[in-house]
Image 1 (cartoon, rainbow, N blue to C red):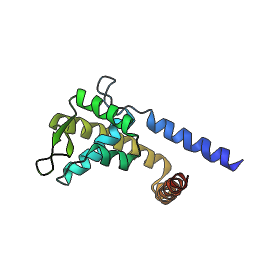
Image 2: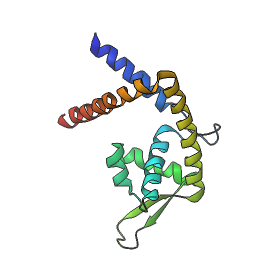
Image 3: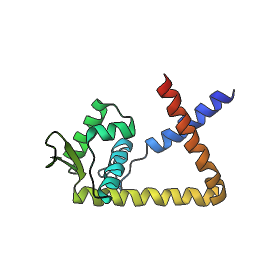
Length: 148
């Protein structure tokens, strides 16, 4: 059945991506959700800003309890810092520490190298045709989840 085939392919792809450890060795590895959080924080910092835990939860759809565990792990590893905003004391801003930013960037480059190899093997044209389908599938799936 098509629904079983699609679900199986989706789970296979997400499992492969989710189980990647984004680091040069096991001691430096960043689990998938930590890498996603670092990616969002790096993007915000490149734009001169920061994010809060609530903003990260909204963008990733990770539960608050899970996000707190992720942030605690990243803070324990010295990758992020939490600071109260000077303009709004209620706001706790999250930022990558300089060493954490460098560690994330190195891991990100390694992942981009893997993606480049995927593009070479699949072919640029096939990858370009796949992108809109993946984005549309993610958007529709999100809509379905929001509908309940």
